[in-house]
Image (cartoon, rainbow over all chains, first blue to last red):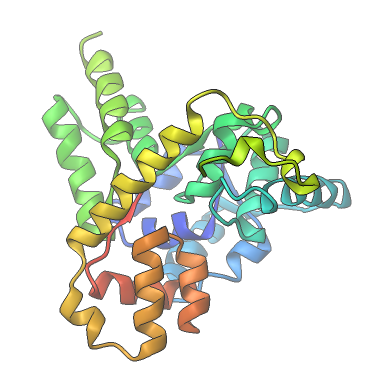
Length: 183
Length: 93
């Protein structure tokens, strides 16, 4: 499985006590060099550098064709006041996820909304940390025997990163995990 | 957002039509997220900050956008993230 990580995802995930599991979930995670440039704190740089050294994270070879896709989606969403503001690195990640078929790892509400409606980009799977934790359960990377175990795992992430997942998102994920546990 | 669909300006005419009810769903979600950030925030800490940091934290509570908040504060995203953690404001998604 391929992933594409944006800066906020990496910054947050680097604080998580189980951060090392990310490399076990994905064969490869792509990162754009402009995303990498946003990462400054010693702890996040250390985490990202180790992923790069292991080959679990790789700089994406950005092309002129992808730059054109970026300009197209930027022109569309920048004019749309219904979409929260999106910075260039967020949209670069969206384009990479579209081109590679990788899961987009993001905490950006604007990106999460674009994939909810856009005819081209709705084929992108956009995952917050919550969906990443869900996938770790399915892959057996986190020992979860009950819904309560899963909620406890999510609580660890929320505590370490000072995050809250919406009731809708949490409810949907918990129901999927419940169904998976009952299979 | 009210009255948006009735606009006739060229810029607005270019906006993609969204599935019915989606904008309303986003508005409800925005209100829920804003309330979670407001409720959790350490208002005493926020009030004690210099004006540009206070403005950035207040913007973040309203919009939940770390990038723009960091720009207002004159900080990197990560530096702002440290500040919002001290102010006990969660990222809500």
